[in-house]
Image (cartoon, rainbow, N blue to C red; front, top):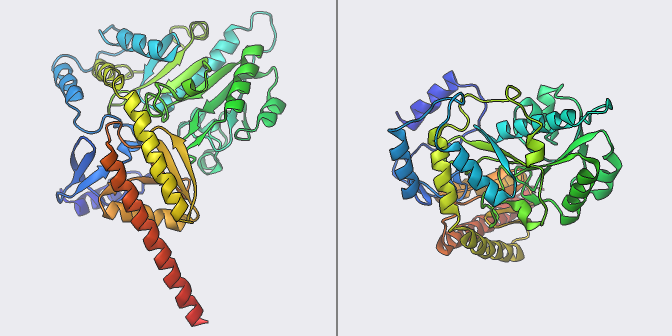
Length: 414
């Protein structure tokens, strides 16, 4: 089917939930994608952080071929060889003890919220009212299901579906005093993205995360850390919270875990995991043999990439900082590892830059209106970074020239 025919069919048949770019991708290899016309694109979005090993990674291909002819699905009523091994590896690199496997990041976050409430209720042995309140952060994004939306601190996502799950209050981002003011004995969990991704790549401050850990540990509440976008190598460590030297009670992961197949996970300490019992939670598809086998191989490949991610991230960050010194439209450069952002002055500018790079065959995206987000595969080289920064340089320069022409035309008109 042609791109035009697919667009017509989708408009007629699908719920209108996406504003897609008018590109029809047909295949990929390493850091590149190709469209139906044969045009090549450098992928610096990697499926919103999913394709961390790029496209058609040979080790992932081998596992897919091997497992697809053996066993794809059994349900969680039975055992298969891969869940325990995957959980063991995740426990080793995270410092946590147990895992629950699901299909996506938002499902993992839902499971984490349920586990926090279940743990609080299980500890309520003395007839006192169980802890139940959740403290989340302003500008956070945890997913699109009702529980995830209830803890997402952005009105544009929440309001169309209100009322949401009760018992959630929002703390100003990185505001330790606000956290202390709102925290009391009724709080069962504090919910944190180590790096707020959808909001424009904003790392939580060391002071805030350390204080959240202190308050929760002292009161018996839990620290829930969302690493769905920033975890599993994206920042140059296995998990972004490892840059802070703290250990959460519950961690959620998803995006790159199964190299493009749907798989998420809730990781928890041994004591917290005791709050869950058979029948309280479950999934039909989550943790199937195909996805888990691929995830084991992803983690194997990740071990050899962490140092590379850190070095490429530093190189990319330096290039973006150099652009900032020459382009006044750039208001900020943020991020760590291969999770980076340019914040521009106007949404119009950001939209135009994304379009210009797409036309040149480079994929990035815009989030929070004015922020250019970069989530490239972990396998990129410096030459790929140079290509992107050069394209950004041209695009930002052309926007300055266009704005000057518009201003001159406006002056002439008056």
